[in-house]
Image 1 (cartoon, rainbow, N blue to C red):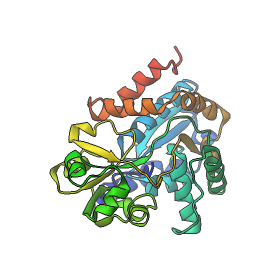
Image 2 (tube, rainbow, N blue to C red; image 1 turned 90 degrees about the vertical axis):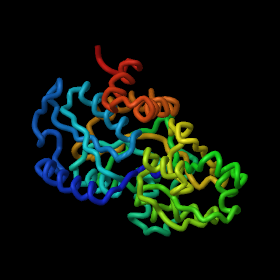
Image 3 (cartoon, rainbow, N blue to C red; image 1 turned 60 degrees about the vertical axis):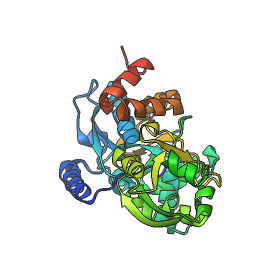
Length: 321
């Protein structure tokens, strides 16, 4: 959720930014007509679908890509490490479409406009949160499409042994335990209001260091399993916690807002009604249980995101025969 930008790695980020700039400079900010006809079924032009560097985002990007290709667009997926990188690219039109999370993006844009100490605009009320998001996104040239029922939130996990030893069921329990905590997460967790600053402020958790292994990655969870770190940032749709002997601690003070999945597009390059309609059908069909299942297929069963996306769309009857 939430935070939902994950797995920042400096070297990878640097290389990705260079590749993105080189590969997409020619089409930055262009409309579909200006980009020219693509190789999709209807030759409607090219769409670049952005993805963050974590499993769920990658699978959703592949699903978006296949749905839009089925609607006649030439599509490809561009993966960037986190929101700090892909959101500016979306504004510039270097990326056209991104699967997003309402509350997390709303607060990201809120902080971008009003500073890190800005009054929160997101809440558990989806309609009000999306309205606030649209107000912040519009001036940046972004169009926020309708949210669906599928949600994902940031979540924090410890080992079952650590939880038992310190009698932990909630994040409040962890704060009261006075344990010194090294947190496995993405680098952006350092400044995200729903991550390290929020854990310290809302729960009084003593975070002594941040281990930049990404959000919910196998490496991050393994570091907690091994005892190198004590806490890992993951999501409520993580399907592999049991594999690492981990358990989620309840967010009992509701630091995390409900994060409904929704598409966000560059209004100029991908604001067409056809795109909105195609993605709308998908959004309406997607459930939280689907997200967990999609994550499980990639993270536990080791299937490729593109193959998982194809099977999902076929099972839901979302591709034309």
